[in-house]
Image 1 (spheres, rainbow, N blue to C red):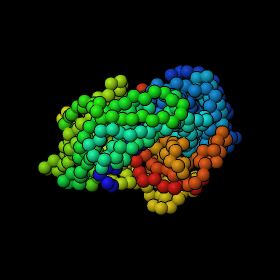
Image 2 (image 1 turned 180 degrees about the horizontal axis):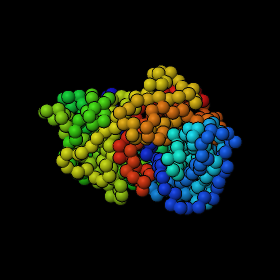
Image 3 (image 1 turned 90 degrees about the vertical axis):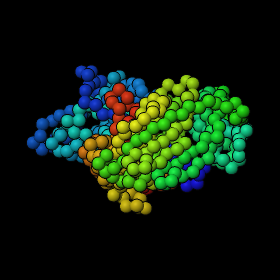
Image 4 (image 1 turned 90 degrees about the horizontal axis):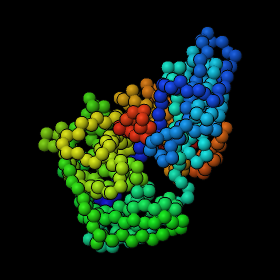
Length: 439
């Protein structure tokens, strides 16, 4: 990877696996939709109930979540029967007469314009299952482009990101991106160069200059020129974190490359800084780093993330707040290693996906992407499982609608959430290699 492209990995790490929640407390609320799911079979078990809560967020990964009425919920029940119902005013659905002795269940919720949400491995002990509807990227987007004026060298790297989502990275002053239409925002730009650390386990970025530029709401493509003559003031911090070891739950990260980045979680993931030095300590037990970052006014939820990447796997820890000094007590998840399908082999939809990881107590998340890399579906695999199959699509959407053209792909991720009040935050995450799918 060339020196001017190192930030791509920092800007494109996907933590969409945080868009899920699974609870066991229904709070005694009434259920506005109920379906008799009994099939007349006799397994000797006691009929039970599968309870589902459908919630939605206005912005991906950002609380609060609110109940959603009128959503089609599909359940693949123990024993193989499939039933559907519509969520009531409180976002809830109940499937009665479920014979839990026959195995576990899978539930799905679909609403146009949102990710297809699914949870598998549901048992009677799971309690109420929450399905979180997350909006896909607004298809109404416009182009922003321009020229960076005042760069110190045209051969340097140049990154510009928006508080409304969207980024551009390359060499030299020309840039372009897409942002939501009719929405004003702020651009954060930096000119940089980079060199590898002495150990090869880190990367040092030299940020030559930073600046910002506001842009107005527009319904058509627009030009915005960025001028480094209006320099932004930056802050610095120094810290360290332990080198991942098998004892710390990261068995495949022994030679991974480390990054530290600062961003705005609620502000489109806008890039606000990274390490200017990062390398192993003299005894090899810790990574030591210096950071440079821009404290952009108006950022309500800054986050500091530490990433470990050994292509194609990666693992990371996200901490709320601006960077703090000193040792960061972090422990990385063991990235899932995909066993099936084999590398380079496309998996037929519905066939079993298998993986291995040391962190089996953390839920896994299978993410599905279209041929042009649009995120369209997630399948949450409840803890204790290392295999799953993508369920047949619900009646509310067809394969042609969800996965138009080309070969879709999937990957296995992991997400440890901060708590039930933060459905959009992973405090630890990890991702596997991707693989092709045959719908």
